[in-house]
Image (cartoon, rainbow, N blue to C red; front, side, top):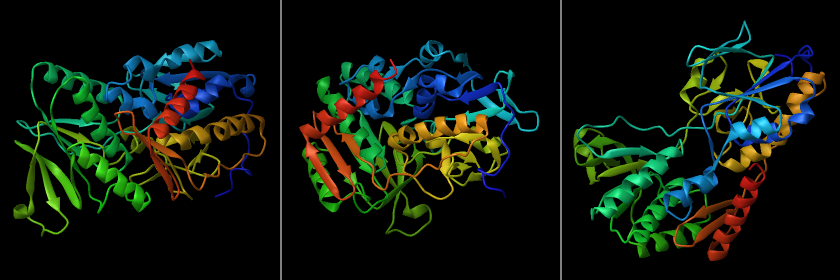
Length: 385
């Protein structure tokens, strides 16, 4: 297959279609003037929710309004046509995007920035309420549901699935939400890993384990949640044999899945190459491996040569490369390669005014870490309001 730099450029086309309003597309819209004489259209089903502030919303420290942007307003401000809709399929031969309501939109260049979703085992009825952490409005609905329970004097039993950054943040902010409303709840975090944050320095994991223990959050390691039952979450320890007798039950009224993210289901229906469990296959130029006029960035994209964590920082860093390559493709110029940074800063919001910052083998926890995170988050959002 010829390299993207060697393939012929598209004709001086007049239709760039942006599907999804993730981090990268916000940047592209804000810099729309760099794309020259081309019609730019954004298709998105609703508002942009910033994942970096989502757990602050769950814990009650932030209002949903603070975590949300209106992509249509940003689009109009920069001369981009905005349409409300959801992608259903692509007609690759006809160069058309097909929306869920049947509308079709032509494109010469297409860019996908669709985010990710939480995979959830089948829900059991009767059984616990089951929640995913994405799309982010699910966390807003969970918060409102629990607030109503606390106001009624209920003491819900909560199980959080996942011992990575997302699961830890969710467990801590559920604890913060209960305290904010003077309510009580039991919180159990279940992780497949041998410890919390397995990719983090061991010192950070130990510090975090002590913090969760001090808050009464129970942690069960080396255990998988395999499904749901009438009384809660079905689990299997790595030490048990397979079979029905190996299953245990962690009692729960609510099960919140935060153990991983996958690309939206529509990615598998587009007729383009994908990487199993990861998303649309893209080259270093952020072009689809199967179509040089289709680009993708953020969580819905899977780089062929790099396996990136699903962190917003990568979508932010891909944004200038995506913008430059869209402009270069239109002009028939060479495209640039996106080179992921070897280490990315991650700051966890642990509720109660505490944060945990990790970059490579360096880490620090406390109030200063959360203060730094808040400053970074506010700066990001202010750039697009």
